[in-house]
Image (cartoon, rainbow, N blue to C red; front, side, top):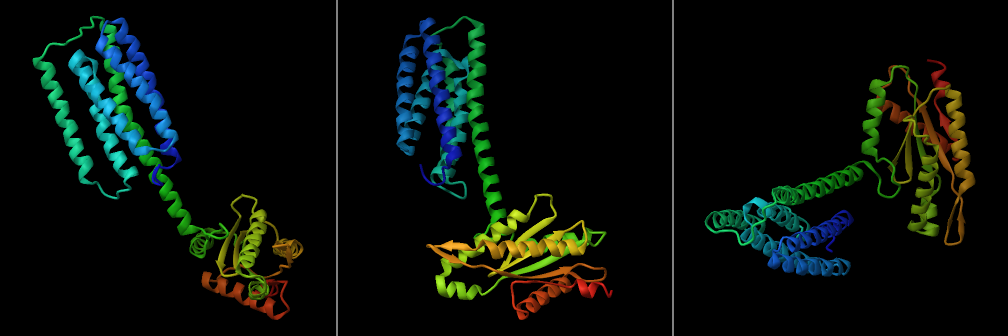
Length: 356
């Protein structure tokens, strides 16, 4: 099927085809035992149609499937109403047709607005509904089934079938819209290479953390891959991407999922961490030293070549009176100081804080 028709739609179509097949098998038995010969043989043909439809679905012949099924349902609805009358509810298939037309236009044609075709066909189905009602009002039924239990059961079942298409398509549409929203949100918040938060999302988290944190136990860290340009120049940009993904994985492993450790790709080879810690500042420094050591011990193997990785970390602790932008500048300055001191180290502002 076309790309617009995703796995969810394909599975739903298979389920619908199975339901329609089962319905026609039951109809065939019902009409056989009530001596409605024409409807019995028509339903035998319908069973064959839906068995063929499975092969069409398997071969992904979407439009052939749609045309065949629509034709079968149209004929079955018209003949059933003409032969049995209004009380059996077959006319409610018009509702499923209208829903199916808009659904097919949206998924099969990939339209972004309502086109003329489903509107015209929707009006045709509404007109057909009226014509069938007028026909049954002025013409006697060909087959008369006296059993009221069967009549009422058929009416309820056909009504449910008609409206179930509408409900199913609305569910598929809702699922698709929600999926697109999640994907758009992912694109707006996540870095495509590493899957980490991007800078925009991190700024939102930082603002919330600074505004809501009462005990000031917040640390921010700038991490920069050492000699990253040299890695790109020596091994290529694909190797550089592998290094960034490896660093992202190490940072993700640090996250225990308790809502205390937030990571983002700040830009280029820089990563940023927001850490809402509970222990002492010294324990936080030890944690980032351990993180630095883990990176140093890991490395990346790219095309049978071992690439050594180290990071320099600028670790700044939030303190009373400091503004968010100043805190970020402080972490950036500490990172620069670490670079000047020889790289592969954790540079902090803890000595400064002890004098405040």
